[in-house]
Amino acid sequence: MTTTSGSAERIPLGDQSVDATICLQAWHWVEPEQATNECDRVLKQNGMMGMAWHTWDRTSSWVQALAAIVEPDGTPADQTLSVPGEFVERGAFERKEFPFNHELTVEQLVQLASSWSFVAQRSDRNVVLAKIRDLGEKAESLHTGLVRFPHITATFRLKQPVRGVVG
Image (cartoon, rainbow, N blue to C red):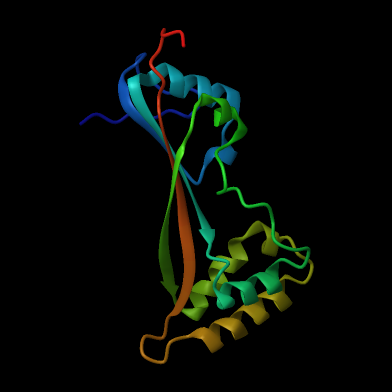
């Protein structure tokens, strides 16, 4: 096996050299037009493109209580509902969801929350983290000592259209 270093904008591989490209929870870090062109360049004919994002399971009352603490301006736009705009006209993406529970201690929950930019940048950060700690302590399992933080991974898959075929 060979490994190389690169970026989404400069993939150090030959034209049509890979069967699939996958981006998990990171598309917002790339320059979309360049990265899209690079994915097109390296994908083999009939290659697969996949994308995925983790998001909170907002059907959970526990997550709703957490959101009420950290999102005073309301729920942000859900990025997991569709693929980035650069891919919209490429064809139909297949979307599938995979639920999972992120289990962590109350201390780990507070540390995680402190890393969220929408918490870290708040002037009342310490108050918010104290509320999260209190919520976590109430949700903590007596048997395991862990808090179950329900998430959903939303995945998208597109089979690369055949190149050079006029429809």
